[in-house]
Length: 557
Image (cartoon, rainbow, N blue to C red; front, side):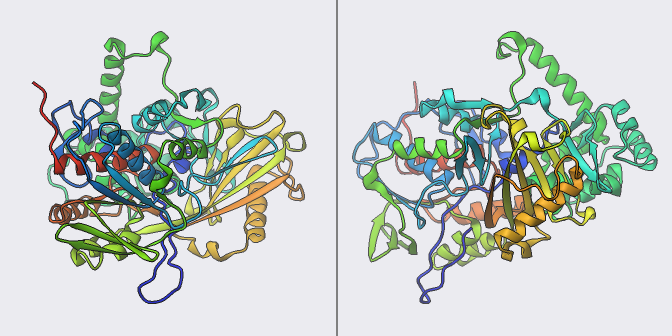
């Protein structure tokens, strides 16, 4: 999404967009927990304590901290008007309640805010071009919605109907019960599933005897970790489609340490991932039975949460809380320079001085903007790989369809050779966002291996999706000649950050660079979590860090 638009040598136009499609891919992993953003746990601390964020060890400011009105005159520039940039701007507005002299400017080169959070309503149906929801267990997004007064719009996923399929030889095979973080924990369900061969099932059973790995490399791919425990077929039919459904990437390239840190820790402690996961599961249930935080009645939290009016509802609520005089739409940042008194930002025909700078654009775009500031930092940022994706929404009259399989949708392994990576039955996942009698299919294409699809015209992509859906679901369910009532294509170019092998070490090197550049913070999906809650958390934390670094909070007595 951040294509540089041609111009003179210095003039580059960025489309600030810092939310990749993590959530809109995570929605397909129904019943399977993936630790897609470990930083959520690391960034939690008691008031006055310390936490490790994606960039550096620092004091963890919380909602209980006060700004104390000691930052008078501080000016903060926020580059990028996606969800991370908007969250940062909102956090500045909260601080301004304590000191009106605090100023900020939010730069967005496009004509709207929100980045990939984009929704439209067609014939009463909410169609999401980008993420359709967020993981409920990560609190930052729901907390922000409550602060914005849109808590009543939060919509839980229809988990009672949750079921996900894997396409195997053009057949839909349901994922077996009990998969947690790619680990089978219900051995009977695994034994009877047609998803795996007898040889793979035997290997999964023997995995219980796997010894602890005392000596392991600094990092390795998810594929290497899964294959060592469960075999190559588990990579092909489980790990690769599930992670492709989240990152749009390749399990052979993604870092086990960054993407699945819990599994890496379990292997070191227990050896067997299945044995370690079963122990963790028992411990979790024991804690839930005794915790005072258990919801009344013991009802489990939904896996995903959406907004009734679409994810753009969150964008609108955020923008409504911001000072219009601080917002700059259709204004690209041309150059950033570090000076003795702070940071100069050149945008349009003006250059302004700021005390703090939050860069909330993709890492590769941040690299070009920060290249004149720090070549080492720019090199590390540009080395973070990205993949592209395409979302195709198809709206149908349900009465003209045959019987759909139960559940939320399906994932397609790369070995199937199809353009579609995944498809969500959106009308099933969130009840109340699609009128009765209508069906919405959200198909995902592209990813690390099919970037060329972005060049295809909309009608070609719609035709591809219609044909493949008919082949997978069957012509009786979706007749090939049946035209959708509405079709919408959204392209997200270089939008999905890939946490490749070595990602955590790269984050340490980036933190070292940032430590030498006072007043600079980074936010977005490329660093410490790819989902909406992660971007919100990092955007708000960036503001707290900048204010705390200039005037440390007064310790409570």
